[in-house]
Image 1 (cartoon, rainbow, N blue to C red):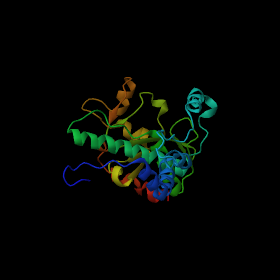
Image 2 (tube, helix red, strand yellow):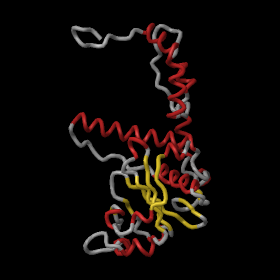
Image 3 (cartoon, one colour):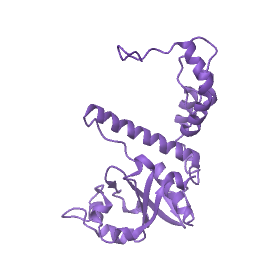
Image 4 (cartoon, rainbow, N blue to C red):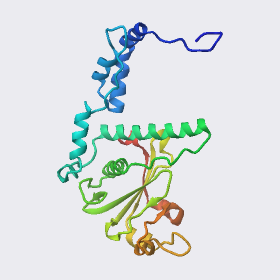
Length: 255
């Protein structure tokens, strides 16, 4: 940085390659492990013997557009669904870290612009459901992702709701509701991966009778064909903390 202008001097191609050869391999290995891209391909792209760095986008996981398009055509085939008992730990951490980075970028952009630029992405269900599975397994439950609903716990259907930055949503079709509700509180997860998990055994009987507004209960809204949206802890204040079964960070859970 020059003392007079405060402008960062450009990094020439030769110096870029020298620095990448000296430090880049180790950094790309670590980043590839954390975020799931092909570190060896990234090295071949960025750590070059040429004077000019190659201008090529690092492909994430899938090598080329043709492979991606082929998978998009067949991913919804029935035989490709309900195949995993749970997401492997490495892939779950990659998805979770990627989601956190996206949310943080959105929040930082709003802070820089001093403006709300739109809805912050909801917590992805494939991440929340698998976090719950790993938590329950650590507590001795027998559970799986291979089922028609969210998760199966000790041969009982379980429904997972995750609260991050908005209300929970319930299907108007009561037949889809599980016998057990697992409420994953993620209000403080964004900086350190901290979660709380609540287990509500008598979900169908108890929660559905609670008034979610002045006039209607959850069950009444479902009967009317509506899709109820509300914060469970806001409407169910009495003895809710008694239903807490686990708290901690995803990194401690999956280490």
